[in-house]
Each structure stands twice: as structure tokens, then as C-alpha cells.
Image 1 (cartoon, rainbow, N blue to C red):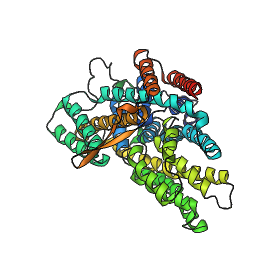
Image 2 (cartoon, helix red, strand yellow):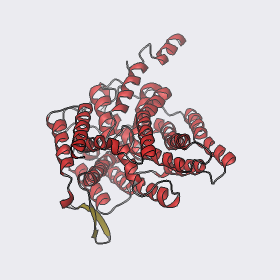
Image 3 (tube, rainbow, N blue to C red):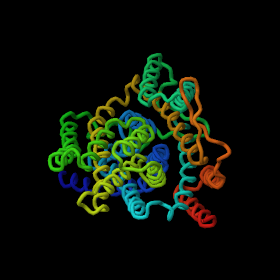
Image 4 (cartoon, rainbow, N blue to C red):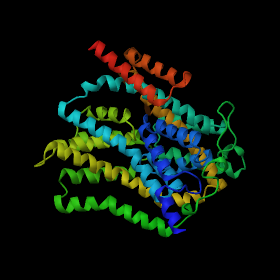
Length: 466
């Protein structure tokens, strides 16, 4: 029996749900390579592959895990990958899923950062970025429709999503307040016995059947390793806490508080704790501190870094890697600037993403045990609906800043709103975005061919007009 367990852990014998570790590795690598378009696009890709195609877990369990990840600081898509990887293949599965989700984006942005630091601009690949941005916009819009079709099953959920969108787009209500309010509404609604606040029941006409948990590879039960185990949670969390904080202590002791690496480590560790609401919710603060306080970036360079993150796989918060890279590059001291920059990028990525594993391994077993709790399910169904509104806000924000070269600020009572200057529409970007949308929605073209065609078209356009 021990021999079988060892072979099963190595992937040579399928576990109870029939998905070997080797197969999972290949699938997570595929998910990582296709994870363009920010959290909306990444979650949609994960849903399409894990739920619709591979049928590893059901719709209800997927939404339950997503709702928990939405409540955590940090990139929710990567944390969702860790959660599902852990469900399928224990701790090793969570580590592999989480690391692979970040690795392609880390390598891509590191390479682009080398080019940026060496040549001072991204003009050599301007056309590539131009085309990719158009395709990414279409991918984000598709994600809104895909997730919305699964979550907005009745008028109550539509209203929740609409209120969330208005709250964040028009009145800039903080994301945590939106989520807490939605949770309270869902909790109260579930107490009335209303089916409108039930998770994962039925499906909307035209959206296709919803995969029930019982029909998935994992089934509807809770795996033995996913049952609440305080001893395991504390042990693994202690290890991760040490891995996260020990480098900061060593930097402080050996280099002092004024060294650039110490500042990078502590600043982005702070970001890892407060980054609720996704990358866009915190990037304004990061840009302000990086430019005005630390002097790591020049004005406008944050947008270049965001362009890298938006057009490479992985979480948008990977833009912090570029900030750490440039900060160390410009304050290299006795080190070679590129060597210092590489260390800065690695350090930033480490302190940003190690906490993600900590949050999941600490809380996921207890969240799984509450999956059948009616009141919690009602709260989480409302959270899911609110998240659709928040993702729609991200899609609108991205469209405004992608399709138009100028944006104007308009007062709205005590609040304000960003609106595009219509006369500054970037016609080639608009046409390319429409073409990408037609390819995705009408022609049902998959993500990689769409990205490749859009990138090629963008490069041809820039070369033709140079």
C-alpha cells in the first residue's frame, strides 16, 4: 500500500479522481501560457479548461473557491489556481499550479525589462504590443460574458452586479466595501429561503448545461486531505511565513534599511497584504510611491510596465516586478546594473507571491468545509454577482485607455468619472479590436491564434506607418 501511495504521488498511478500529477502539470502549464487579459481573462481561461473541457471540478465548487480568493489580498486568479491544484493533488499540486501560473509571465516581463533598460523604450516591439492590446480587450469582454452568464442567473444577481458596477465606476467605492455589502445582502437573502441566492443551481437558457459537482472528476465530496486540519494548516503556514519574511530580516540586518533591496522587499511585502480588489486597485498607489517617493521610475514608465503585464501571461500585478527591476537598476551601487535589476525583479516577485500560497493553505480547508452551508452559499453567490460588476468596470477602464489616446476627468457631484475624448479614438486599434472580437465571438477562434493574428497585424501596421 505504501508503494502504491508513493507511485501515486509521483504520478504513475492515477489518484481516486483519475487525474495524474503529470497530466495536471501539463494542464497547469497550458493554463499559465494562455492566461492573458488580466484577472477576468485568466479566470475565464481557467474555467474553460478546468471546468468545461477537463471537467475536473464542478461549477459550484469553482465559484465557491473563486469567491474565497476574491476576499483575499493578492492576485485572485493565481490563488484560484493554487486552490484547485491543492484540491486535486494536495500541497504539491497547489505549489505546482501556483508557481506555473506566475513563471511564464515572470520570464516574459524579465526579458522585456532587459530590452527596456538597455534601449530606453519598447519601440522595437511597439507593433507587437499594439496588436496584443487589441486582442486582450476582446478577451476581457469575452470573460465578462462568460462569467456573467454563469453567475447572473436571476434578477437579484443582475441587480447586485449592476449596483457593484455603478458603485465602483461612478462613485469609486472601495472593493472590500462592495464585497462585504454583497455578502451581507446574500446572507440576508439566503435566510429568507429565496432560490435567487443559491449557488450553482440550474443554468440560463442558451449558456449550456452547468457541470454539477457530482459529475466532475473530483466529485461532490471533500477529499480527505481537504478536510479541516489545524495542525497541517499551521505547519505549512509557518514554513511559508518564514520563507516570506526571512529574506526581509536578512536584508535589514546585512544591508540596512536604506538599501534599495531592503526598501523593495518591505514595500512590496506591504503591497502583498493590502492588494484587495485586483491590480488596478493598488497600481495608482504603487506608481505614486515608486515615482515620487522612491524615484524608481520616471513619470509615464508605469504605463509601459502595465503594458508589459497586460500583454504577457500571468497576473497583472506582475507589473510590480518591472518596478522592482527598474528600482534596482537605477540604484545598483557596486553591482552591475543588470545584475542588480535581476535581483530586484526576483525579490519583488518572491515577496509578492509567496503570501498567496500562505493565504490559501491556511484557509482553504476550512472554506471547503463550509461549501454546503446555506447562508454562506447565499453570501458567496452575491459576491460572485458583485465581482461580475467589478470585472465589467475593469473591461470598461481597459477599453477607455486602449481605444482612445486622451481621457478627460468629469465632475459628478462630489465624485468624478473618467470618460474618453471621442475625437481621439485610435481607429486602427478600434478596428483591430473589432476584428479580434469577431474572431472570438463569431468565428469561435481560440485564444492563441487570435493573439498571434492580432500581434502580426499590429506589427504590420506599425511597420507600414513608421
